[in-house]
Image (cartoon, rainbow, N blue to C red; front, side, top):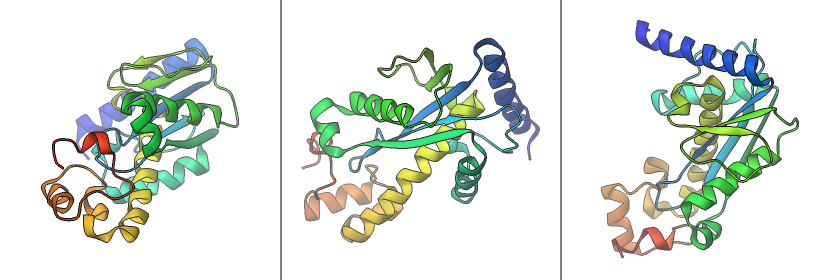
Length: 206
């Protein structure tokens, strides 16, 4: 493994240690699925102990699918608390995608079995919650707790899209997970939209 990767992952652990020293029990929150043309948006909240023993935590986008799957199970086993939540396509259309993502994050926080002292949310927005915390731009690359949440949200959403691929095989959801690839756009022009497509995202395609 490259030295810079090891250094970055250690820095993520050190970041969380510093936040625990300042605030006590911290929780990382991240979402998956803001950009796709189809499917629900997912969010996860994760509370890790200082000595959680999960090695290789990283931004989910920097990990292979196989590694994400392994970490998904390990995080659920070793985290002090975790929750995965969603906002539906209907809610995305009614609220807009940003507010729907915030709603999914809020639900993930509300679903935790333990209330954290402080919440770290990936990005530049903070969901509506009474819990103290802050948004962290690029948080999935600087906090191990946020990285753990990014893995749970990403893997859970990818698995959901695999189930949707079985229902709507003509779109290739198992390959692109609903993102606007050339193949997905071509399928949309050929078959039209299905019930899990986000109509407001399709205006320039259909």
